Image 1 (cartoon, one colour):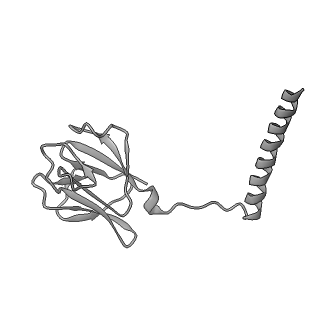
Image 2: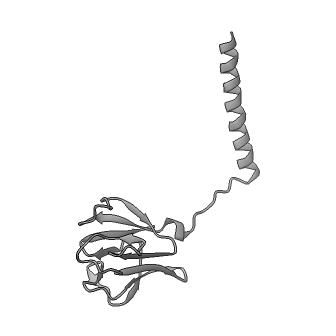
Image 3: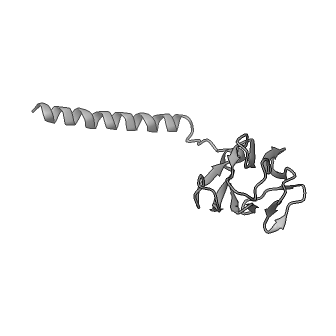
Length: 138
């Protein structure tokens, strides 16, 4: 008998909380927060190359600035003999995401073309740094 009342109480609690959530949603006009471009922008690992800390298909979110290189002072450290200590930097300028080569020895490629200085990144662009290949997602 007590078990029946306990189950009934749990069912009523679930219904109560569901109705409360629906009421709050209706009261707020059903608006959902729209995430900004900055929070959805990132890099997908297409080929991890020599990097044990990356996996193919992994996602690296980019918010604000991301420095890439072999040294430990970078946000993204690549264990690759063809990557310079401070190789590249991704950052926001106005509303665009930019990539800049930091004077690396072996260069940075965007869509199979060597990056001379800096460029605007677009969704779908492929970035090659050493043996690692990334795809821009957003």
